[in-house]
Image 1 (cartoon, rainbow, N blue to C red):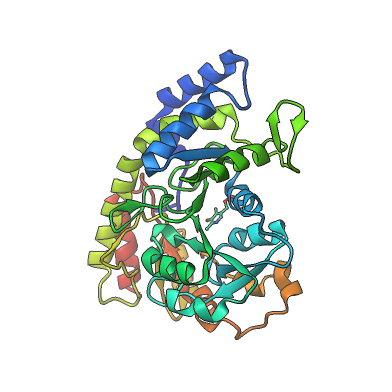
Image 2 (cartoon, rainbow, N blue to C red):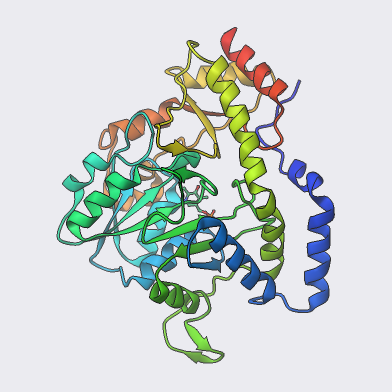
Length: 364
Ligand SMILES: *Cc1c(COP(=O)(O)O)cnc(C)c1O
């Protein structure tokens, strides 16, 4: 038996005729950047998230970066980031010129611990990036409360959380702005790179639109020092097709998660904790185990592919050696990096596969 972690071809085969038609439509239109497909996708995704604006950009990292730029956050400023996140969250801050200030997670939800934010705030702090890690919404009301107290902007990193809800409201509509990634493996993924900013703020939306396209309002008139970061017509057309299936695919992820949560109980692993206010979309199904590496090896021998998200926290990565952090600075984050294991999960994984994985873990 070979159980792949995720096979992206399954999604393509399910909707092949729709995707192929979208490809044909764009190829024959003769227009490949900043056209009708992008406008239509932006309108559809904004409506999906329940916000006024969506601006398609090159990828998730750029979505976060361009928002910080548009807020004029840069040199000398500080931005609160989760210590426990994918490094892109931090890189967006570094690209803007500002300084990422890490805060430890809640050990049960793995997301930013709102109680620990205040201690990290200084007079230079301008914003908080709240990541909805693994598709589990962060505790936004508590984060918003701290942000209000210190007059900070909130940027959601919703790269892993398309369709997830916090107290009935969709991620991407909860902060001042949000950055999404449409990397192929995300819950809503393109067939290449892609990203988007969502916001209800008219001025921010307008500015991000300029920034993604060379800082230009009118062709060849450049008002800002901009970037080239655009969601192309092909990816926008593919995403329009896939957006129609997102809720169904998230529903399938949820039913797999329910099986894991029910059947893996009282076994050798800690299961994800779902607060009562959270409707996660299970981008990843992450368990914890003290002897994670040996668990991963056992599963591998049975043909089950698992992954680690993420083995090295940003503060201990080579990239951030410049900030001078050392082992022990963020103990909860470091503990998670040693114990987390992502089990097979996706809209095309079968219940029988999940049962096979559960049996393999239980018989260990
Ligand atoms: C994927 C991801 C990003 C970056 O998205 P890209 O499209 O790969 O640039 C940012 N933050 C988180 C939490 C992610 O998972």
